[in-house]
Each structure stands twice: as C-alpha cells, then as structure tokens.
Length: 213
Length: 90
View 1 (cartoon, each protein chain N blue to C red):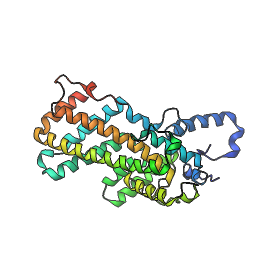
View 2 (view 1 turned 135 degrees about the vertical axis):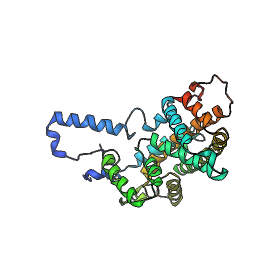
View 3 (view 1 turned 120 degrees about the vertical axis):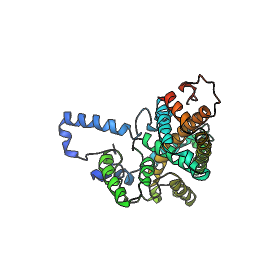
View 4 (view 1 turned 90 degrees about the vertical axis):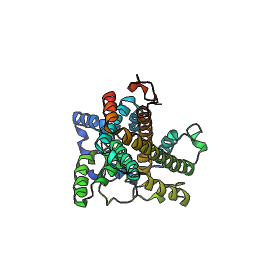
C-alpha cells in the first residue's frame, strides 16, 4: 500500500493499533479516490452537491454589486464568483480548488501562510503541498514518455488551476475532478439562468434542476 | 521506498507504475463525452489528453458564456430576483 501516512514498519507488531490505523487510512484513502468504491469526483454528480453549490453561487452573486458595473467586468465578476463558489464546494481537497482560492489573495505573505496552514492540514490527505516538490520524471514512464504526450500533459497542466508544475499522475487526477466539477458548474449556472430568465414555469422548484447523470 | 511523512503521496511517484497511469487515463476517458464509449485499449493516451484539453476549454467557454448571461440577467433585475432565487434554493 503506497499510502503510508505513518511509515512505521516496526509498529505492525501491535495488531489492534494497526487495524485502527488502517481504518484511519481507509477513510483518508477513500477521499483520494484510489481504491474506493465511489470515486471522489463522483460527488459532483449528486443533486445535493449541485444544490449546495447553487445556493452558494446565488449568495456570492447577490453580494456583488452587478448593477453598478459596466458590462465587460460584469461577466468576469460572475465568472470569478462562480469559480470561487466551486472551489469552496471542493472543500480544499484538490489542488485546483486551493489554487483558485489562494489566487484571490493578492498579498503573497498571506498566500504563504495559507499554504503552510493548508500544508499541515492537508498533509495527511495529499502529501506535500509546498511549491518545491521534487519533480517526478515523466521520462520514467514507458510509452508515456513520447514528446507528443509530454507536450499535451504540459498543456493540460496549464489548463487546470494549480497544476503547472505537477507530475503526470497528479495532473490526471486533478483534471478528472476538475472536469466533473466544471460540468456541475455548467449545470447549476444553466439552471440558474433558466430560472432568472423566466423560462420554466412559475411553479418551478429546485427539482427543475436538470437530472444529473 | 521513501518513508518521509510529508511525501505520502509523492513517495509513490518513485514507484508509480504504468498501470496506475493507465488507470488514471481510463478514468479520465470515462468522463469525456467523445471517448467514453470507446474501448480503452483502442484509445491512445495522447488522444485522451488531447480530448481532455479540448473538453476543459469548451467547458470554460460555456462557463464564460453563462457568466455573461447571468450577469446581464442579474444586472437588469438587480437584487430583487436574486432574493427570490435565494428563497427558492434554500
């Protein structure tokens, strides 16, 4: 098992401690979508998640003084609010969500503090989140070391927030979650736009949200 | 095997197998509307990556368009309807 949070080979003499540790590990491994029955990105398909996001989005939007803005910055403001709400909904478990949230804070000092705090909090879940990670050589991967593949991986790393310097497996993992989250974002925003434009019937309740999956 | 606590996930990087990569790629493939119905052994990793990039870009565009639309809708109706929506959703 590669997910050794506490690499302690000699402790295995105590069975009960081991099983407790395994239980803890299991709970944490599950959220990493490695061997869980339900992959972590599947939560983006659930209706409840979409509703949570929608209400967060509406809250964020109603706080932005859209009426005072000119047209060009308005769309941008909505997009940023939507992305932030999405990142909150991710509960800080993914790099892309953390990257979105930390990008907001302009003060670099604050950003460093955030990183350190989230590093300790998330260390158990996601390993090092410090910027100076040893870069995994993609060259090691047979068949995936083609320059064409490598180029695409780089492009992908730039598309997913916070993944510019990440190794291939991390980028793939983050992209999976990011795509699922984006799809939910699109569903939620479409539903909201429909509601606002008075498309649906006036008796539309939340169940009007498109069925997911 | 690295036993440093802080690299619990990255430590696997020295031991990351092709199989794990393959699994990650096929997981990604399942999400892509273009490729999900094709057999994973028939789709190259390069294709999956390409489609992923394209798909993310198109999703971004969609979100941008929706943001524009929402910003117009919200600006014209201002806070009144936002409050209504809030009540509906909560």
